[in-house]
Structures are given as C-alpha cells and as structure tokens.
Image 1 (cartoon, rainbow over the protein chains, first blue to last red):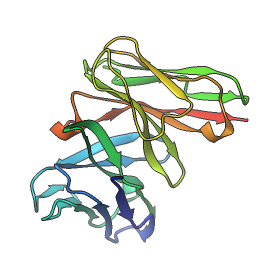
Image 2 (cartoon, rainbow over the protein chains, first blue to last red; image 1 turned 45 degrees about the vertical axis):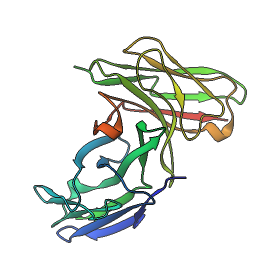
Image 3 (cartoon, chains in turn brown, green; image 1 turned 90 degrees about the vertical axis):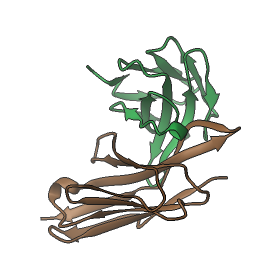
Length: 114
Length: 115
C-alpha cells in the first residue's frame, strides 16, 4: 500500500543550528502538506505544496516539493526553542479516482537545547 | 469560533467497557476524520466521513464504529475496549478532500487508557 516515510525520526540540535527533515512517498503526490505538533498538543497545518519543484518560505522555515512529486523537505534555519515539536508531512491517498484522505508520514521529533 | 472540539479530554476504561468519543466542528466543514496516534506510529486514520450521511473505513477500523450525526458532529464508539486501543485520539475536519488540497483542522485530542 501507499507509504510515506520521514527521516530522521528524531533530531536533537543546539539552539541556532539548522534542521532538516525529509519526507518520501512510495507514490506520486498531487500535493503535500506539512503539520507541526507541539509536545502534548495537536497537529497544526503549516503549509501545502502543489507544483513540482515548488519552494515556499515561512520566516525561518523553507519547504520544498521534489521534481518528481514523491519527496519533500522542511528546513529550519537557526532553530529556536519555539521550534520544538514533531513535524509531519502528509499526502492524499487516492482510492477509486478520488480522495478525501491524507496519509501521514511517521514524523520527525525536533528537540532544541537552549 | 471554537474550531474542532472533543470530549472527553482524558478517559480510563477497563477491558470490555464501551464508550463514545464526541467531536464537533463549527467551521461548516464537509469532511471529518478520526485518527489515533501511538508513539513512533504517526497518525493513523480510523474512519472518515466525506460528507454528511457517509462514512468509510480508514487504515485501522477494527474495534471501532462511527456515526456522522449531522454536519457538525462525528462520534467514535469503542464497543468493547481492549488494551491495544490505548492511544491518543484526534478528530479532524476539512472543507473538502485532501486530493483537492484542503488542509485538516484538528481537535485537542482524547487520551484514552484501557487497563
């Protein structure tokens, strides 16, 4: 079945260091979404990428969608303690020509040491 | 605007007991979802409802039932709880399907322990 994997599972950085998480899908995606979940919280939507090779930025966060639309990455420049949490990518699950469902990646837990 | 609300926030059940998790959204969304989250497993879809009056199975439906009561409310029922159902349960809603690019809005979650 369709799978979405993320690496690494866990990353510990010193505040001010950069961080990158990678997302890989077993199938081509029509779009990819990124969510952030703070410890003890719920997932919150960050951004959606649709076009092949698309790059979007949100302040210190840079999101990229691969040319083949099967992979994506999230890069955080100069991490802060507020960046702590688990980052998930998610893509549509196609079933019978249409989809309402998302399949979530396994997530990357980011710990930031002050 | 409360967004997506879930009750209860915490629950402890004994094996074999039943319970219903409630979810409501006030964003006039068509689609609603139930996920469970276990350590290291990410979010797994239990059931979803693409629109009022329809429900469909997700990745891990066994042991659960759902009801889309109306456009606002989507409940998840555990008929006979098992320790393997110890998890954090999230309800989510979206304006439309993921394939059409709609993002999902999540509730605060229910932390369920089955002993």
